[in-house]
Length: 390
Ligand SMILES: Cc1cc2nc3c(=O)[nH]c(=O)nc-3n(C[C@H](O)[C@H](O)[C@H](O)COP(=O)(O)OP(=O)(O)OC[C@H]3O[C@@H](n4cnc5c(N)ncnc54)[C@H](O)[C@@H]3O)c2cc1C
Image (cartoon, rainbow, N blue to C red; front, side):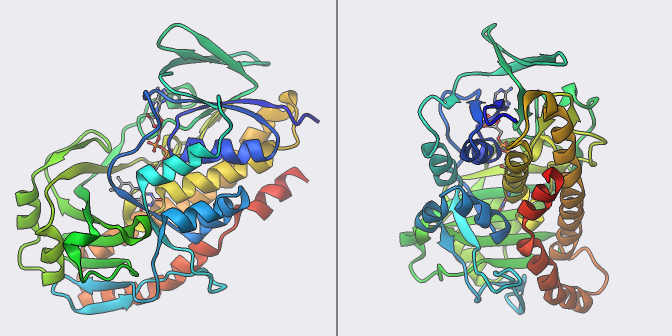
């Protein structure tokens, strides 16, 4: 038994930074290597749900979630594109715990990084290669240096440099949709309700608004069809006028937000078919590197948090010799869960884009969808991970 397993995490996004917190909380040695010159994020929101919040709390970040997040409550709802209310949005787990928050992505990575001891994160470290022996993992950087560890974790996102070291390159699946994303300050939307998540589901498009940073701004996302393929999740400046024209004639509340948009960014929507494996020897993957998914359940980052928690539990009491077997156990545990969520995200996207024959049935499905969310949010990876190590 060794409490000093040495772990190299590649990628300082939400997934890598949370994993570092969870592994350190169990006494392991961790270094995060991030290619960027500093830890930061784009100006957009992310929805944080109870299945992740329980783990953020367990590593001492519950206060930061409350401080930086904007809790959304029972007035959250789905609407048809003309503003007709369809159904409430589930904002609690099965126990009635309301822990759904809108979060500014920069705030999120900011507090995940701030809790790590000085020296844990090495910025300006771009990984360009990997090799391993039976005893050691070696991560190679663009500047020619190499870091050695007992375990390497690729948390380097949808374009992962490390993924080809566990599985042959595979094609991303483009879903013919781009999303326009951005933030609008509260002052410019004086009467906007800051206590709810709201989505308008229209023909082949949908529009989402939720508050972030304790209600200081709202995050909007407009999903529209396109024939133009974009690089996976590549964000590019978008034209606010084009965005406005995409949603012309919708509920005036959508127009109210869009009128205030000065700057917007476009993202292509991709996921991947599940990888046959995401672990090889001393290397495993986490978050989007392992299982990119469509954003229609708002679960990509939440699933990365579950990954980090599972990994920390599973590696907590193992020595270097036993680590590869534990990495396989981690992958097995996570594979089933994320496959269900990936599939659920695809299905839900068809509903909210109204890609169905019968809108009355779609509306009934959105009411029934609350149960899926209740289950999704109630899941706790900890007992499953514990069972694998006992
Ligand atoms: C439109 C849209 C809306 C979304 N909304 C939500 C939501 O509401 N809720 C939710 O949970 N998820 C949402 N997601 C998904 C979520 O953004 C991702 O699942 C999440 O950010 C993945 O985190 P990650 O840490 O795995 O990867 P990333 O956030 O991509 O982080 C990867 C990190 O690795 C670094 N890196 C990459 N390559 C290298 C290298 N070679 N060397 C060193 N460092 C490297 C990068 O610089 C980056 O910092 C959404 C996605 C989209 C496209």
